[in-house]
Image (tube, rainbow, N blue to C red; front, side):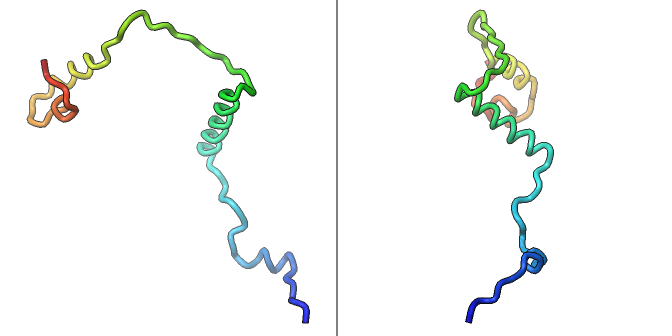
Amino acid sequence: MPAKRKSAKSSKASGAPTGRAKRSPVAHGIISGLKEAAAFARGEISLPVRMVNVSGPVDVRAPFLRLAGTVSRPGNLSSRKGFSRK
């Protein structure tokens, strides 16, 4: 005896998930940006590029230590991050 086949109408009405959920606009933007970045890295597309030359060494710890040194309580930010308060 041949197996009974379901019609297209009855299989869609079963309540089973029909595929992937609809993406939010934010998720769509992130995914399209990542695809664009990958295509740029492969050399498939060209995008505007801005080159920046830094004149010399930059001390990125100094502003952090200046702000962290103003906290005068035990366990302040500089000691938690492992910096000395010199």
